[in-house]
Length: 554
Image (cartoon, rainbow, N blue to C red; front, side, top):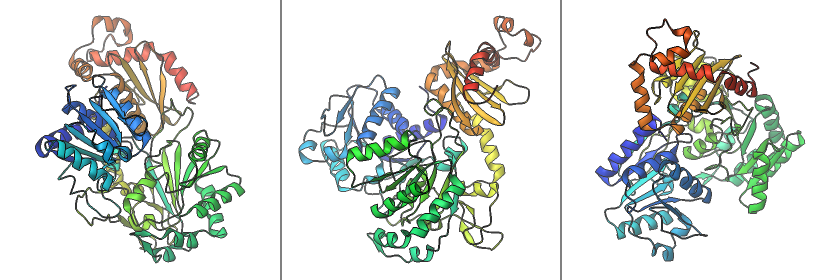
């Protein structure tokens, strides 16, 4: 398996920082491949089976996910699990639940560790994490400590400086949108007459008093307006709604139901079975809307979600980023055939966007850090509004598409240049195989991939050698190139990529030209492009079938 070039850069910087400082924090948002990079850092530092590593997470699904992806990246290293059900240190890398490991009786079983990794490291100031870190350092004062997080600045403004002395690297949401690994948010602030009251609402423990928020937001007219505006902007989209209290969420769910929209409810007071049933109904599409209270903010993803509704404010930029992030993942066509996702509509009926605006955090390890909203000026009414909004909340002016890109820190022409640059940042050369630049191919020893424009839509396809073409992605050009690149990275190795690059300057072989008679007079044809053209020619029927299945109509 190959890492993306940007992933390699973070891994290299993390390794260098760990060797220089003994600890480091790496920042990578949803879609960056955080677990893959975490595994790659461990693989670089712990090449011996006698080296001991522990990866700490706070949810069962994260522990299982981390272990599965770790094995993909490091098949030569053994693993084990330490949680409520199984308590084993047998593997060279152990994946542990913080709630279980932090208990004193379990800490006593901890062996001497060479590396401790904290997933979702913004939690590292919590007492349970500090107990684990302190105990590991007591056993081995030379232990290395790596933290990985998407939101480095905590809501309570407690910095991570007591745990980490440096930030080795930060991949931004901006980068992932321009590389096609996340979709762009399109944000609309919906004023239902409560913004001033919400701004003045009292706060408890630093965040808004949700009981008071419910009193302000949870009225029949407002809930009906929410459903009406949602039907106007996002009626065909799977949607996650964030509410203030359980009663608020239940009333919103019922209002969607009364409007003929299948909606389910998830909150912390439900039994595990009830929660699983609600999540399953949403995952299967039996419910189009899922309404929740502080359950789906972090660590939950359902990629078909393409609308986020905010019915609660937040003092914490990190919470705002996490809520919006639930809708930014791209779609894998193998998992979700027939679905197309080009963007995510964010409908904010409160003040979160007005307060925070940007969905980026600049990592700062000090206490007291709070993110400031990035703004722009409405040309109609001169209002200063968050850069992410698509419509002015004061006068209703619709910002053009180029203004939307300011939310991710780009002018339109810069966005185009970055999109083009996707082709140059791949581990493999993408060569045009059509005269009008509507079809591109990449080839390796084990796999090939094709990105093609048909009927006003981009498609990404890939196949293993001698295998049938699979539809990988449908949507924007950048999303399709990202999916195709990831397919090549999954099936090729660093060694293969290096050998393939050697073909870029070599002329096509006589055997290749024998298969490509139409190119017999092309003396500039390289061995690599000839390989791409042969893959396109030999797999034409397979590609057509995959495109037909994806709805291209050809």
